[in-house]
Image 1 (cartoon, rainbow, N blue to C red):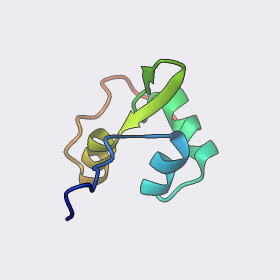
Image 2: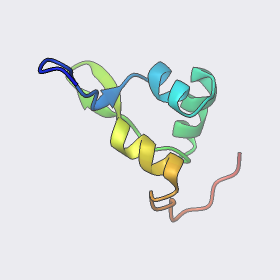
Image 3: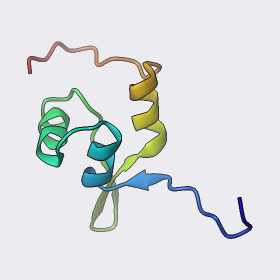
Length: 70
């Protein structure tokens, strides 16, 4: 890595959906029902934690306590 390489910490819904190999609308639907985490508000922007998305993919993120139906 070069000195100026940046690590992305937060992503848009489109980028987060790509990380999970799904369409942005599918990603937003899963966020809406609580199957995926809500975004962090940064000013007027909504962003999802890349670390949290990776934890979901790796199966190390705790599951929601409430039941939900897809």
